[in-house]
Image 1 (cartoon, rainbow, N blue to C red):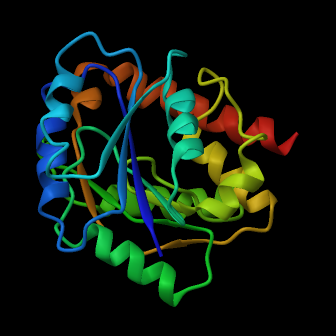
Image 2 (spheres, helix red, strand yellow; image 1 turned 90 degrees about the vertical axis):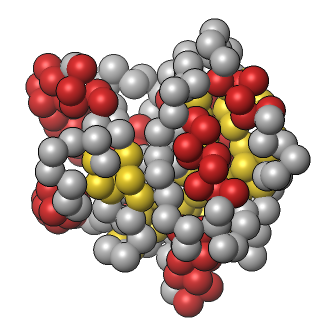
Length: 227
């Protein structure tokens, strides 16, 4: 079973090095790492290139701006049986890849996700994300994926790739992907032991977007898919 990791990047020079160092330290290496350059204008890609000798990195370009377009491009170009995704600011435990691989080998599923902990906020706990996942399971009648800590099979991606929504202003890309997988009768599981750490910088810098815009888009996503 081959695992590809897809990381969309847009001006992440302050964070990408830590993420890549974590991937170097994985006790089971991924088969490929696809960095999707979504029009970076800083030193992000220069930093990534320095890790090509340590990691099986491929750098591809996506000119259409937005996480959906970058994610889709990475998933389409990936060769792995499992497509794992994290963010450029993710800090991944050394057994992250190994646990994902083991879970897919033991369980017949289409998607897998786990909680995230915001490492630069005061409250460093997965509790709030776990509550969110439980609520989403009720709201959408099925499990949902979390973008910075998720993996799906290449097989299910091939089934939904032409149906996922592209309008980021109207949907959450990870919730939208989850709903399309569920529509195909796909199975998504949670594993509370597969934890990833992410930056809470957006909560600090743009609280309005996080606490007002994000919830509004969440309900728009659910509404659009229901009706």
